[in-house]
Amino acid sequence: MQPPFPSFTSTWHNDTYAAIDPTKPDLSQTGKTIIITGAGSGIGRQTALSFAKANASHIVLIGRTESTLSETATLITSTNPSTKATVHAASVTDSAAISSIAASVGTWDVLVLGAASISSPALVAQADLTAWWDNYEVNVKAVVQNVQAFLPTANPKRASLFTLAAGGFVFGAKATAYLSGYITSKVTQSKLTEYLAAENPNLFAVSVHPGMVDTKVFRSSGADPAKLPIDTERLPADFLVWLSQGEGEKVGFLNGKTVFANWDVDELEAKKAEIEGNEGLLTIGLGGWPFVGGN
Image 1 (cartoon, rainbow, N blue to C red):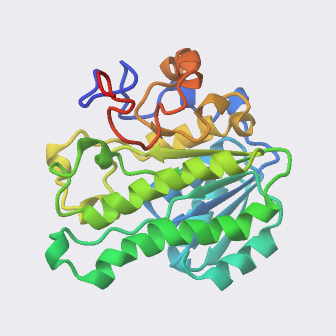
Image 2 (cartoon, helix red, strand yellow):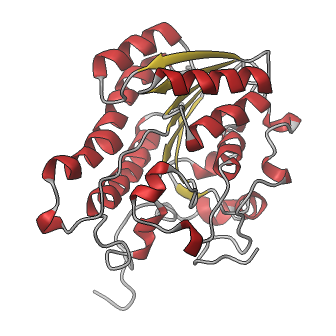
């Protein structure tokens, strides 16, 4: 379909499609260990199922509620009986618990940091500071904690790490007013992902906007799904499998970038030279710099 918003590709997707079908042989995750936070529902759960369809050997499910994680594990077994699923009930903000999980998991290949927090819409001057700052506790600090816990056991040859971005930051403050805590924390998270890519030669790190998916976090923003072009959960889930091919060897030109799951992957690949030739493209920076006509 035609993009409803400004888009890097001329084709825009709201649902999964053939090029990112996780059952494709070239997207196989056979032999790989996948770790997913926020795996008890929504995009995290669907991502686990997409990796199961891609024949991942082991999927590690992390979230706060054991019962919902167990439901995800059951669905994984139904999807692919050969995929092992393990459940770890813990908050991503619990550094000791995450470190313990990392020690028990051992070597991994793909880490999807999908857990997120969004405070209720509020003016900066009137927001509950504890709730506002929780955006940073989960969306920024917990990402660093998880990286410090898991990175030492990443596959030394090549591993992939994905954070889930908030596409709303591209529209500016006026369009996303009252969501300052969430949006600014997600901008920080995307920039942090750039640093992870720059600092770790054997890590493929990408920040992925999953689209407008009707989840609990999405509704907490105050958005009305009836008024927006809603995307399916399978779109970002299958897109993440596509990004995991070869642990970035085939899609390495996107390392350190922020991308939208809605963008057509064939068109993205066609823009490889353009992306590789512009270090600042698809990254967080100062709009308009270097300034045309300036000094």
